[in-house]
Image (cartoon, rainbow, N blue to C red; front, side, top):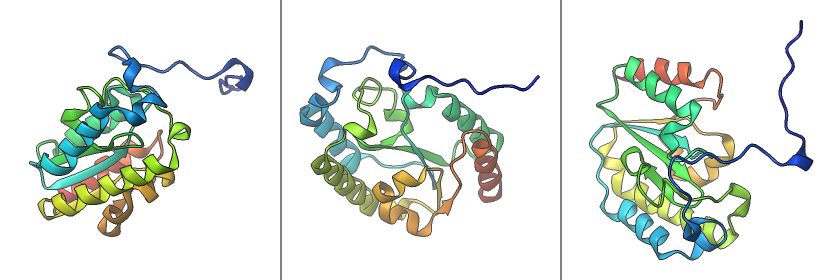
Amino acid sequence: MRQRRYTVPKDRGGFPRKHRFRVDADLTAPVAFFSGRVEAFMELITRYWRPEGDILLLSPCSNVKPYPLSPINRKVEAAIKRAGAWERVEWVFISDLLGPVPYEYAWIPPACCYEARPGDVPDHWARLVGGAVRAWWARVRPYFRFIVAFLPRKYYGLAGPILNNAVLIKYDIFRGQKRVEKVLSKIA
C-alpha cells in the first residue's frame, strides 16, 4: 500500500500555531511591529548579549514557540549534543520579528509568545531587523571561530554578512540534523 502525504486544503486553513506559553495580544502582527517590548528585546540582544561559545549555529525561527521545542529544533539539539559540541555552540535563531534570538532568550517573552508570520512583516520592519542583525554581527563576530548556518534560502538576505565565512548546510527538515551533527563533529 502506497503511503499518501497528508495535506490541508487551503480553504480550511493551515495547522494551528503551537505555543507552549500563552500568545501575548500585544505581540501579534501587526501590533507587534509597534511594541516597545520588541524594540527593547532587539536592543538587549544587539547591544549587550555576549556569547560564551566559539561556534555560532544559525537556524530559523519556527511556528512553535519557544523555538527549541519545534520538532526540527529538538532533532538539531540532539545532533549538537551527539557531536559533543553543546558547550561550545552558541545557537542563535533568526526571526523576522526579533532579529537574532540566542537559545537562552528563546524561552522568555517576547520570543516565546509572539505570533507574526513572515508574510506579515512590513518592508520598513524588515529593513530595521536587517540593520539589527548587521549591528549584532559587527559586535559579536570576534567571539566566533566557526560559523554554521542551517537556514532556508529565504533567510539568506536577513543573515547577510554572517554567511560570508559560514559553512552552509542545506536546510532539510528530514536530513538536516544529520548534516549539522556531521559538520559539528568535525569542528568540535
